Length: 357
Ligand SMILES: NC(=O)c1ccc[n+]([C@@H]2O[C@H](COP(=O)([O-])OP(=O)(O)OC[C@H]3O[C@@H](n4cnc5c(N)ncnc54)[C@H](OP(=O)(O)O)[C@@H]3O)[C@@H](O)[C@H]2O)c1
Image (cartoon, rainbow, N blue to C red; front, side, top):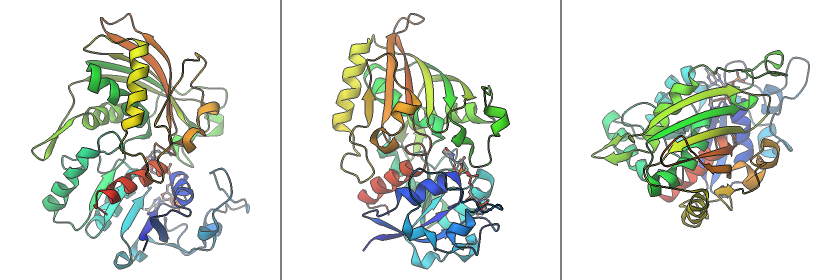
């Protein structure tokens, strides 16, 4: 029997990606959905229809049949007795209370930042820090919950950490400097105005840089005696918003402990591809990393469909002369696929395999 799941925040930008990522899923079945009071009580199609009658479906392709006439519930109407797992995709403020309420009874996988910075909460990226999932047991015990909250990182952290992990493991890292060029969809359905972003670059995204700094060190840290020891890496970043619909591009400089050149980096990513733990999971891409020698890659328009948005693309890899040892490179990571909804489904698959769901 499939595990019964609910999506909270089902009408939003990430919620819609959840709807699609869970369509015909072999292990999970969406049996309940919820959003704010504004949408509650309506059929899904009506809940995403705006005042002028336009259906605001932001994900490419058709709206899956299973969801069209499903009733959107209030959070309080969700029946936890008939569920095995909650996917939460609401803004952090609302998420705090919602996730606390559900975690008392059920596992909660979240795309919000509400719980990310708590000591007994791992920030999980499947394939990167699976071992930190053991902290969920500590969390359950500490809080006397039947479930737990497992948040994903901020979508800008995701691509950075995925690309740093193989380098850190093999060559060590002292300092990382990153500038992001983030997609409009990262701000949610009402986050960025068309007037503000057209023909423009916004040089500031509130709270984003602090999140990337803290999360990178935590995810690359080590789980020891029931706590995560942060990685000893200095992280500096500048986060900008650019007129791209989906997918974040990042320019990265990394100072490594050992000498490294672009060919060694290529070999490192390619061998990581072969050993990645998520291989075989239903939402895993064929290739976790795509390494490009072509200097015109990565580009959002060319990379965002690769591996259905679950592949992280790397290019422009060069030796960096600012450091004794180090590299510069550019990466592309899909903020709504690997960086949120489909990445959350992949995390659920990894935790299901570990018998935590
Ligand atoms: N967009 C991205 O690329 C991305 C990537 C990674 C993480 N995230 C995180 O994922 C979360 C969702 O982001 P988003 O971009 O999907 O936001 P969004 O488009 O603004 O959608 C928010 C969703 O939450 C619902 N909601 C709001 N307040 C609620 C409440 N009190 N109770 C129940 N539901 C409520 C909304 O319902 P109504 O439609 O009824 O208002 C809507 O379904 C955020 O925490 C965000 O930081 C986003």
